[in-house]
Image 1: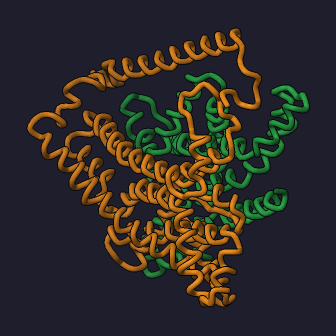
Image 2: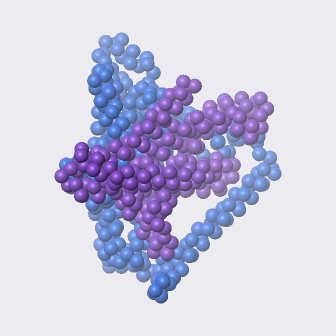
Image 3: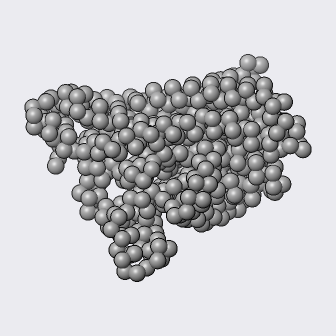
Length: 334
Length: 215
């Protein structure tokens, strides 16, 4: 299918017109970008007469190349990224998955006395800002920033992963459970051996996307004075001179974040595309076509749900999925 | 518990600022997000590419970094905002790709047979869109959109670290002032957040159930 169902196949006039719009808007965007880069590079005069060098001036970037470079890069990458951000994110991710599995079991328990309190606790965790949770853990348990950050991220994302897993279990065909029970497995065995592995597989893309969120949210830990990359960069800015280096350090930190997050998002999307046998052939048929000719406004549902899985999950503050069992619900929650 | 009632005024002020941030940021995000969504489904390739690039860039940037950009980097370029409008802009920019994705996935979620049926009945492009697709898409869009705004509500707390005296900043001040009653103070703050997020979540779940019945 080359053209979307919504349109007739474009004729020569339409094609020419869309090419013109394409070129014009491309030129406009490139123009704006160039203008921005040039005007950022202009030297400027402050109100009290001092002249500041342009932002691309070598003097603003020398800390990344001269003899201080080793210190700066090791500070940002080793102390900030690896020992700070990734150390917190790694442990929090493991804990979040464990907590999520536990939540999903409790939430689908047969006894009302387990299910209802779990639901309330889950709602509570999902409705609270991570930042507040970090502060709460820091102050209430009198710990250090590291543990406050790790546990806040773990509990919050665990609640969301738990919801995703529960939705995955609820979306399974009823026959799966019935077949397990009729084979003589107990309810718990059925859940563990039959239902849970399938739900996990189905929800893996959402879970990974949520882990990207977790990684992004570690930047909030600067509030509890935990030295992750953002806080390290802030200290560097103050140390080397903020007027001179704030822009260059900001840009480098942004680039580091984007590299890490984009590669994780890419991994999530790859798994979303490859994982889950049921979605596989559909995904291939309607795979996203960046830059392709058709607009894919309405390409088959598979793209939509995959897109939503990959996107919906990578939400900053995370979401608050409302869904109750309906398979569609999972696409909405983040 | 007493500490909550003693500081009800401070809580209330923080709550008002949080609501302001939510409304201002939400409005900005809705406008920007709609624009990006339209670009993303447009038939012109370069517009789509621009929108996709913007979405990927902003979505993979931590909110804190967006705030840093507006609060600390822009002033060195002699572009500065007051704290509250600056926070609203940061929240709008950060939330806009999520709004765009929710809108887009809603349109994509309408079964293709609907469009085919409309086309085969002889409806034009605009008729197909306005009579058949959009009425269905809107229903599918509302719950994920509400989820985006719930996330925005929680994200307003980041503004508290950037000199905006909203709920989270209030909680820090109150927690420092009442060192002996930290837990009640923070539970009070959590309550005010839940006042916003839980009803929104209930509405989303309700609409989602309605839609589920429909299909």
